[in-house]
Amino acid sequence: MSLIRIKINGIETEVPSDFTVLDAARQLKIPIPTLCNHPLLSPYGGCRLCVVEIKGIARPITACTTPVSDGMEVITSTPILEQLRKTIVELLLSDHPQDCLLCEASGDCTLQELAYFYGIRENRFDGKRRMYEDNDKNPFISRDMQKCILCGRCVRICDEIQGVHAIDYTKRGFDTKVSTAYDMDLDCEFCGQCVSVCPTGALTGKQWSSKGRTKDTKTVDTVCPYCGVGCQITLHVKDEDVIRVTSSPKSHNQGLLCIKGRFGYTFIRSPERLKIPLIRVVDKKNDDFGNGNIKISFKEASWQEAIDYIISNLKAIKDKHGPDAICGLSSARCTNEENYLFQKFMRAVVGTNNVDHCARL
Ligand code: SF4
Ligand code: SF4
Ligand code: SF4
Ligand code: FES
Image 1 (tube, protein in one colour):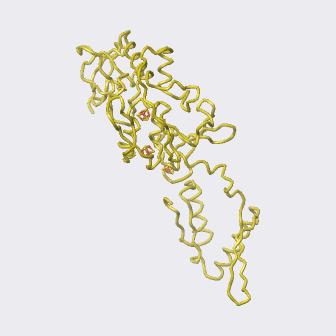
Image 2 (cartoon, helix red, strand yellow):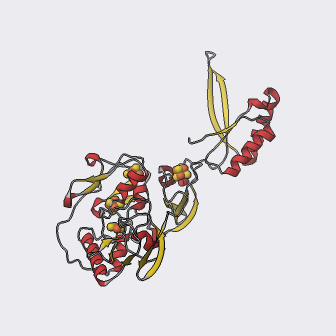
Image 3 (spheres, protein in one colour):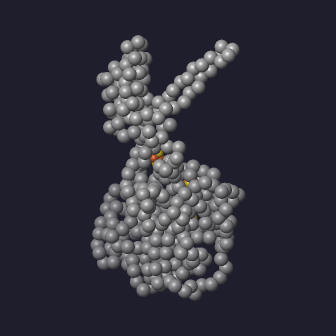
C-alpha cells in the first residue's frame, strides 16, 4: 500500500492510500465524534456527525466516507462544524426518550456522552415522536426501538460480520425502523454482536437488565470457557456475581463472541451445577418374576475417594483386558495444558493411544 501526504489541523502526516479522513485523524489521535462508524464495518455516512472541512470543497463533508488524497488539507473542528454537530445531536434527541435515569446503557451511551459534551439540556426541536413497545419475546435481546438512532451498526454487523442478516431497515422516512422481516420476534443466532455495537440503549441484554450498569461493576478479563477458539471475554462482576459478559474490541476476537460466550454465563450460579464428585452406583435386582431390574443412583464422594475409585477400576480393566480396552475423552473446554496432560496420562500411564476430545460439542 502506497503512502500519501495529508495535513490535518496543520499537522502533516503520511497515511496509507486506502485510509479515510477519519482513519487518518485517528492515526494522529485527533478526535472526531462519530455514531454510525465502527472500525469493523463498512463506512455508512448516516449520522453526519463526523463532518470536517476540506480545502477546496465548498461544504462540510463526512470524514468516515471520504478517502484521503495526496496533498489534502483537513480541518476537524471550527465553530461552524461544532454547531452542526450540536444540531445533529439535538435532532437525534428530539425523537429520543429522555429516560437516562432508567436506561440500561446510561454511563455507557455515546448519545448521552455527546449530549453532555454539547451541553444539551432543553431541546428546541419539538415534534412527532416514534412510539414503539419493546414486546419482543426472544430470551436474550431487549429491543427498545424508541431509543434507536438508525445508525445502522446492528444491521451492518449482523450482515457483514455475522452473515445472518436477521435485521434490516423497514418502512421509509420518519417511520424507518430497524426490524426483522414482518416485524416478528427476533429469531436468529443470538450472538449479541448487534448489542455490542449499539451506541445507545436500544439494544441491551435481557439477562443483565436492572442488575447493574457498567459503572457499577468491576471488570475481569478472562477466556471464554466454552470452546477451543478461546475468545477473550470481560466479566462484569457486581457483589461477587457475574452479571454481564462483553468482549474488548482489542481482543484477538475483535470483541466478537458467539451466543455461548456472550450469554451462556448463568451456569456459574446454577443450582444444578456439580460441585463435588459423584460415584455411580448400579443396583441390579431381579423381581419376583426373575426379570432384571437396574437402578442407577449417584453417591457423593470426596475427591480422594473418587480418584481411588478411578485408579482401582482402570487398573482392573487394564489387568483383565489390556490398555486398549480403555479410552479417554477430553474436552475443548479445557486449557491446552490440561489436554496435553490428559493425553500424556492416557499414553504414558494407561498405555493406550485411545484418546480423543469432544471438538465443538
Ligand atoms: S444477535 Fe447476532 S444474529 Fe441476531 S440480530 Fe444480533 S447480530 Fe444478528
Ligand atoms: S438499534 Fe442501536 S445499533 Fe441498531 S440502528 Fe438503532 S441505535 Fe444503531
Ligand atoms: S464458545 Fe463462542 S465465544 Fe466462546 S470461545 Fe468459542 S466461539 Fe468464542
Ligand atoms: S460517523 Fe461519519 S457519518 Fe456517522
